[in-house]
Image (cartoon, rainbow, N blue to C red):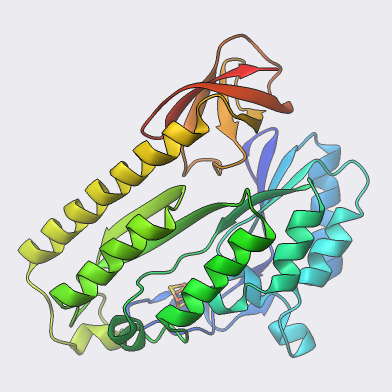
Amino acid sequence: MSLTAPHTAYLKIADGCNNRCAYCTIPFIRGNYRSKPLKDILQEAKIMIEAGVKEISLIAQDTTSYGIDLYGKPNLLSLLEKLLKLKGLCRLRIMYGYPHRVTRELARLMASTDKIFHYLDIPLQHIADPVLKRMNRHCDGTQIRRTLDMLKTEVPDISLRTNFIVGFPGETQKDFNELKKFVQDYEFDNMGVFEYFREKGTAAYTMEQIPAKIKHSRARELIETQSRVIDKINKRLLNTTLEAIADGTDFGRTYKDAPDIDGKVTFTHPVTVGSVFKARVVAAEGYERELIPL
Ligand code: SF4
């Protein structure tokens, strides 16, 4: 159990990864996917709730694979159903889902309860098929778009965070343009942009590399594209009411923002630290917003 602040905590549900993305060393370092036994997770969650934690973020290298080693198939849904029954549970947040394992059943469960924030961190890394294939991502652009469309239909107020890697070996200008267009079209609420980093021992290490100058300029371009998306999102957010959580008496986050990584909000008047409440957006600039607690 790791606490970021008394009212928010990360609960690790598994370690390791079976995905073998071509750029990543984690499977070599952490080994194959190992789910934490269900009873241990429930016990940890209970301790957190008793300690006053209001927001439990479920983490793993790939949360949507939870149970694959225990039950022979992923079973995150069943874990969530059991967590939802815990007395005193306030809010869960699901981090790090793998795109083709995000199911309609998961989306429907999220839509059916306010105890799971309508938020999903779903690292996509790219959208162009040739790049996804070289990355060994096990899903193509069509599957990714289908998953995102399904999520937006089933959970209309879902907030999506993702990551993209630019300058992966062999990424052409056409691949990058497809990524930029995808970012404009799908309007992610939060997004990380990383220049590909060559790691010894990975499959991508021996692939033909892209010059650093191109990697930098593509990263800059994608960040600029995303800031225009955020301007559009901010215009729509003005005067809407969102659920917020107080990290301090005058600052915190909305349900759209995970602790430590996403945007922050300030409140127009003091609130109780750790409280979860509705608030109206009165100003928004970039990833920073001002809210009136209601
Ligand atoms: S990037 Fe994530 S999903 Fe891919 S191998 Fe690394 S830890 Fe696993």
